Length: 306
Image 1 (cartoon, rainbow, N blue to C red):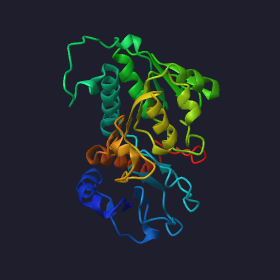
Image 2: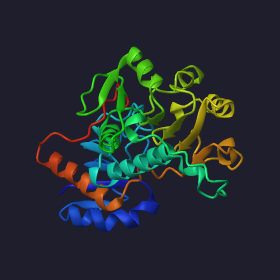
Image 3: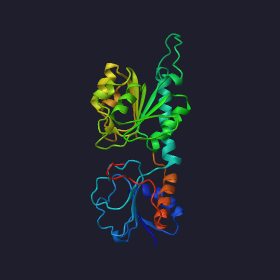
């Protein structure tokens, strides 16, 4: 009998319980199991499980989120860790969020939404072919977003820390590649993981390399941006707008400047929301692979942090 511990929060259990039982009818799935009898742990940030040592027959930890920075540094975790890669739900949600906000900034829609129409100045935006977009991060989410944006006619540059090849995308990597990617980015999308190497990647010096008046869309990680540098660039006009779905502190504090700044659109971490129906299928698929002796999918490189 396969035993699965659901350690992803009691508030999610009522949603996931019937879905996981339907996918894995022969498994025992519960929120409370003797640690020495657990084969798999369904996990989420903030889980009550922080010490994995008692789980002596554990085969894998299956994370419900794409982000794994809250668990990769846990020295008691010795088994494979899989992150959530859900093309049906999570990835599609991110593609829709990024595409929507790239188009919003490209078309200048904020000028006409909730603002009176003054005069009749017919200044049209450029066509997509004349609006370079850069996406930092070419993993599953970044590559999918890059492909969707390119399909609309935008010239898309993608940057990653290691070489990648995405059809139809100008792919750059390394320090020199980052410099080139930033200098052409009239709209910049951040889809990198949070690691020591990416923390504050968009500091004052990096923001200064962007074309004047560029817009930033960040549905990746709040720690990628230096908040003070971002606010200063918005105030100076170096940046025209920032759409932010992730923050250093979540929920975003009521008194945070991002809530009231006229050039910031905050959204409540909804860009790549884990959909239970499709996530349950991903979790079940990895359990079946493990029980069949096959390699797990979507494994985290613990050294790289993602």
